[in-house]
Length: 203
Image 1 (cartoon, rainbow, N blue to C red):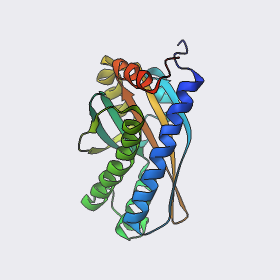
Image 2: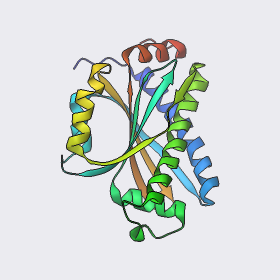
Image 3: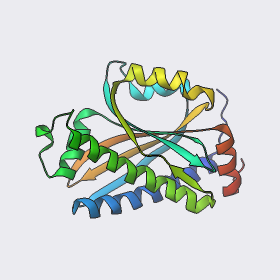
Image 4: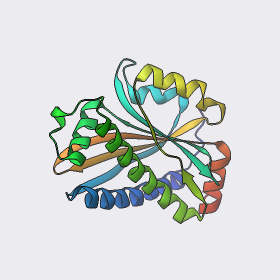
């Protein structure tokens, strides 16, 4: 696929991701009363056909938190956690050892949705502040699914309006426990144009 985005555009998006991560870390730290560090070591655009390379084996399970982006920008956001990281994160929120938490527990699912609200909301707020665009996100839905089903959904539903995903690698440390999330933003082509125009970086 032909490279469509300049280094300046990607650097600006990484800056937004870093600002969002800082806000999210502060909010989660206050919620947990624990030290939380969130870093964004990588931001890149990934063609839809290459997303399988990020998710690896088709049988691998992920918790998938799905949110819609509305207002001046349109698109979908996925926040994915491997089961062990989801349990450890939920355990930190609930004050329980992660290994004692059942994957089907409603409290686990509720805590992951709250985390998604904080993380995605912080990224969107940073983007809205820098672009002065009105951006809203829907309430999160959560599912546990295999990579194969996630990819099928992306190729069938999202490919109708988006050609690539904005991949934001998100690394978290909660009380010295390392966690890794996969944040995928699927903006419409028109939304990308609006973002770069508002940021004054068209190429």
